[in-house]
Image (cartoon, rainbow, N blue to C red; front, top):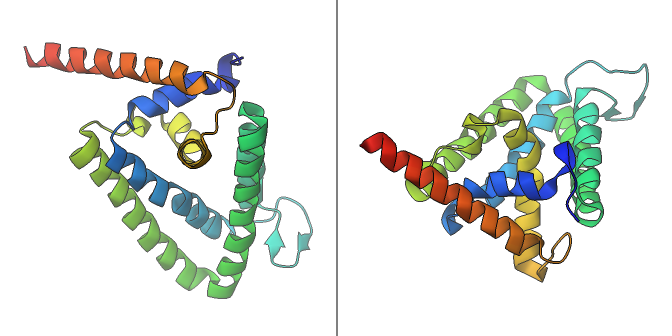
Length: 193
């Protein structure tokens, strides 16, 4: 059932899950990952348009381009949850655009900076205090930025309604996560010796 390469959801989720196994750290990420995406889209509102027209407050710029890329990638990973994640990305882009237009650049970048600092600090505290493992972004920056919103959504869907992209997905991912964590702990022990 799993796909190969770039669209192998099981492989990506296992990588991410190995860095997010502590329940408090998972909760912190659920609170802060989507606001990071949202505020990034707020500031990207001020990038130049990629085409010569706009739809009122909605400018087809880099914020729109990133929204399309994220949404399309999520749908390729899993049609059902990916479509929902893609919809949420577009909701973030629309409301981020309206907020950016309302605030104006001078105030928007200050709001974005404060929100980003607060959310990133929370996540680093989650890793340092609760997970006791460096964030995934230190090992795979692209994967961490691109996948994090989808993963916290998948975790929320699994907790709320038991959602699985396909039968056996979570059991398979858990086995890979456990093996990754065991390997990480063993390599950490070897470094101490």
